[in-house]
Length: 65
Image 1: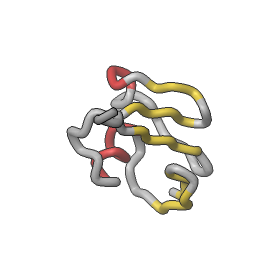
Image 2 (image 1 turned 30 degrees about the vertical axis):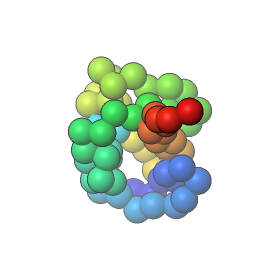
Image 3 (image 1 turned 90 degrees about the vertical axis):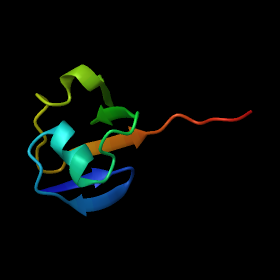
Image 4 (image 1 turned 180 degrees about the vertical axis):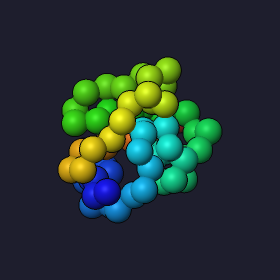
């Protein structure tokens, strides 16, 4: 299916947000996620189904100061 990830069109096979993160290489990284501008907590990712045209934002925490 075609979705947008951090502003870039991507074609993925994953049906859920958790599977998409694995497919996109985020695996066990600690990241924040939003689908269509709505925050999705890590505890809900496995059950959050993705649909054609969804907009996924993946944000990693910054370190330093």
